[in-house]
View 1 (tube, rainbow, N blue to C red):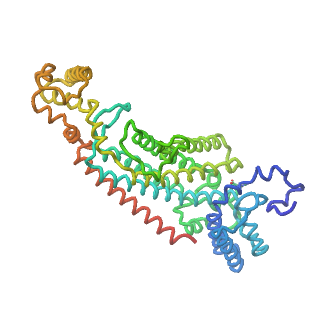
View 2 (cartoon, rainbow, N blue to C red; view 1 turned 135 degrees about the vertical axis):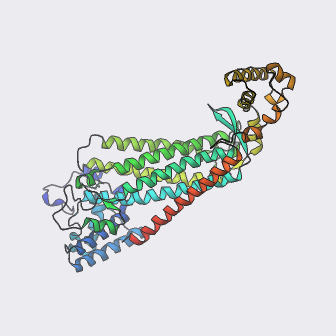
View 3 (tube, helix red, strand yellow; view 1 turned 90 degrees about the vertical axis):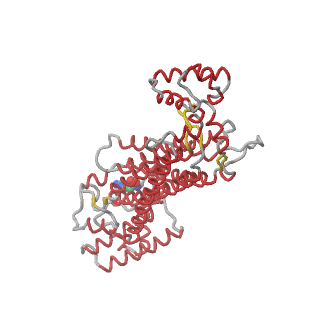
Length: 476
Ligand code: ARG
């Protein structure tokens, strides 16, 4: 029966199907390092508060450090019999240093321990996600700078609407990813709270020092309610929500790349390194990577809905249901990491077909609004101008030509207000340059937005550097 850490109260061993079903070691072993990090801080606190003798503390510390080295070397074997990462490590510790290892868990429960591990882990991953988004934005900014004079059609309803600078288009994504980073950075303060010391639910009878252990682990504060500390999973919901929004953004970008590299658009060519061939059709070069990014969005949304459902109506405090918080979160981290890591070099190496973009921008009456605006400048109310241009466009469609192909006489048969200067006004360049309003697509606007975004990126860089330094000094 015997080797379970909690076997004292039991007269029978667990059913052979229970062990496997109940265990989380298959997936929570990724927490091994943070679990040991938490235990090292906990045992240091037990020593500092006089709960354990100095000799006991150093024995436990040395034992944990040896196990940590084995974890880092990848030479640990975990057992399903020990159920989860916490008990696996505690068992390894007692095997390593004898019964004194059993003193580590004084004043602690697995309930506050697992909450601590997840906080440490998500805190680290929050920073990592900001770093990956920062890298992606660096690539987008580089391309935006490079493509400042490239003009392509901007779309609404996936119909050509108005010509825009490619930089402008790319900077729209930079804005989305900036918001994603800001959300992560804001959530950091809610992740950066220490649940340790909440015990199983109500606190502990030992004279522990929660603030001290929290500071050792670099936390800004402690949970102020022990019941909330062991049952709160909001920070995971928040992480999954943010991840879902990031995936929305990535999937939109991926979709555009897929469209743009089709023969129908022919706006970009993805580097061979990010495409694959077909097993049957020799001519094919498929955009698998953006397709997969688009496709993987589904599982991340699924994990969010999964955890929301697990938490719904769950009574306080810890319930074993909460063990179900992990796989979805870990898979989300792996998925997001993969998508962000690939999106950046794919955009960096993509070839832009400037000629084709330009040609496309010149077709499809993308300058029609400008003709209407021209008539408004001449005093015609916008509604009437809209009507006149609508009729002129219809005429051009029937004649199979663009607005710029009309003769002045043709123009004037629709409105006497149109003069020779119309040809300049409707050229692609002019149409783009005329949009000087704040946040518009004129070159000066785009350049100013580019430089603001670089400043913002620099601020985020400081935040990242600061946090990394904090870890370097605080990690026990
Ligand atoms: N493996 C568990 C989890 O992930 C650890 C906490 C177990 N606590 C308990 N009282 N059984 O949630």
